[in-house]
Image 1: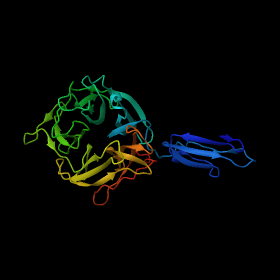
Image 2: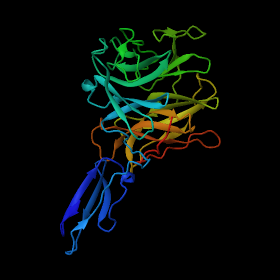
Image 3: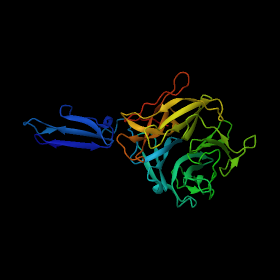
Image 4: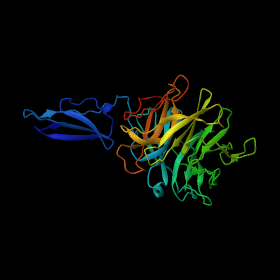
Length: 360
């Protein structure tokens, strides 16, 4: 841009500072305002105009947080082939959460948005919000589990399942009814996570209201299968659990993670346990993700992805931008997840810059 003598302008861009290949260090200064990087450039000398170049460098292999625009939360990240997909909740007022989008990338830098992959029009029993998806692929089909209707005792709602021929949908209701409708062990049927264990069994962890249940799924995901003792539900609630369970199997250990606190408040955070079995017991080890007054607040409801090419792990989560006053003002971020020599998870350092380009 060209500036007349004494003229000052502000330039606001939605990309991280690391993308700016050049700016004039004498007259330009940077700051962060409302989640955007703002560069104030100007001159005080009468013998100018002064020229300041602000240039986007597409070769810079660093992403940014949030990794894509919009109010989203509860992200489920998964790797399908060489592509990462993130399936989040639309973080809107409850009655407006009637559809879902997803996002895909092959490098964690450049994201493609896939809109309206499922909506309440596709799930006739879902008369209220849909949120907190969980996904997986089986036998060439893509399954999306979701919570709907904020169900209470005696109401219709809970955890549903939809299916598609493509990871970006469109998804259609598999059952025509909830997979889990009832309140068991005081756990509201929401915030499900599904994973395939080493023996081929499919398990689901779920639950709000401070309680977490575990169930085993039939191979067609249309029903529950009893455990060897004949029960359908096992409570596995760890200390301080609120919601958002997630399971990671690494080096023969089961890393069970969950969110604590109030999702609208600064005390929202992620904790974890390590067990030798998918059934636990899950003894709380510590907190791995929490508010940082310099970066963002209310960080939680996460998932974890791994690059098979680099063996690096990444945590996908939501947080409130600094200064946010609306509980729904949540954005999706990706940062690196590290383990120490004893296999414990190191506390996550949230960033604005995000992660370097990575292949999957």
